[in-house]
Image 1 (cartoon, protein in one colour):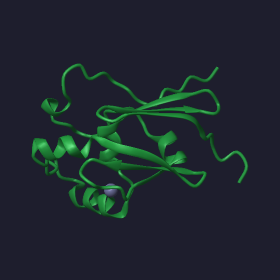
Image 2 (cartoon, rainbow, N blue to C red):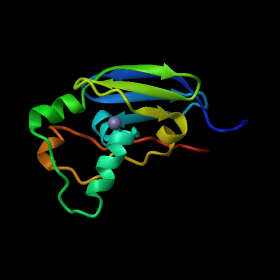
Image 3 (cartoon, protein in one colour):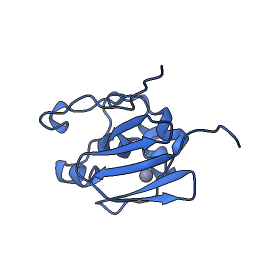
Image 4 (cartoon, protein in one colour):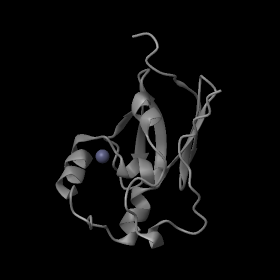
Length: 131
Ligand SMILES: [Zn+2]
């Protein structure tokens, strides 16, 4: 199991916006919460995403639901390999393992309604600076 990836040394949750992780190898990743929620790895969310794969217009919940869906109540460590995020709408089934987090691309992988992005959104994603 050696070398299977870095672990976080610092986790900062900005409940309404983003999750910042500083990894033990010095990299810092910033994940918009909306990205993490859309990428929720739990079985229910995966099934839902697969059901909409191939459609150009995924079902979009009402704005107030979306707001709760991408606001986090908290984040906790799961064993030595993952994080669990508890969302404001009560969803907490997703286990985000570190390898998954490290593999996430930037914050613009899914089609998103521009009006849902909120003002002043910047492109933020895992930053990889290897020298
Ligand atoms: Zn889920």
